[in-house]
Amino acid sequence: MARFPYQYVNINGIPTLQSRKVTVGTDAVDFMFRPDFDRNPYRGLLLIYLSEAIPTGTTTTLPIRFVMAGQTQNVTLPSGDNWTVADAATGVYLVYYDRYANVLQLIQ
Image (cartoon, rainbow, N blue to C red):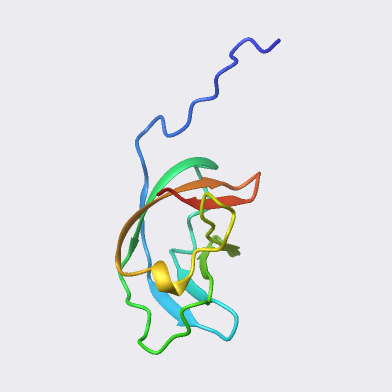
């Protein structure tokens, strides 16, 4: 049995990241963040500020992806479905991120 059965996350608060660029592709919409975000939290909550608007006329069924620390990952909903352009806008979002479990999920 583990000596400390509880694993704490976000001990130093909830980090806030601001998007730096949005790119519309044929298969997804990518929001880019600072490339140096390759540190804690490896698992925990993040406040994400999407500061760029998705260009009008973008297909609403395209999934949203975040590009951080050289990795591109789809943002999912609690149902497991991809978060799409139809539901995204500029503003602040709360997400759960676990790099090791490959989870980037919008909290609703």
